Length: 119
Image (cartoon, rainbow, N blue to C red; front, top):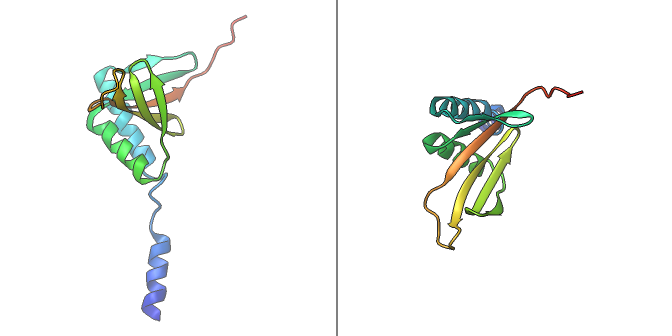
């Protein structure tokens, strides 16, 4: 019985997977975007886009954490999207001609910036 109680205590002390890993994955994406020069401004944020292994790790993490995807149709094809606070990952699943896509994964982080009211 004592072993069972100890196992329960250890299980309860285990860190949750989500959202505790998000800061490290987000930082990696930001670093990747800066290194690749994939930083742009929007009306209300700075937009950082990461690709490659960094995006794949973030996508896999979101998938494993149970973040449900939704589909988007664009002129470039059909995409699965998984969103999280301040960002999202986008994976192309179908080309515009209807063929299955084999490439096209990126994650975007939006860092809000102050919006200056114009008189």
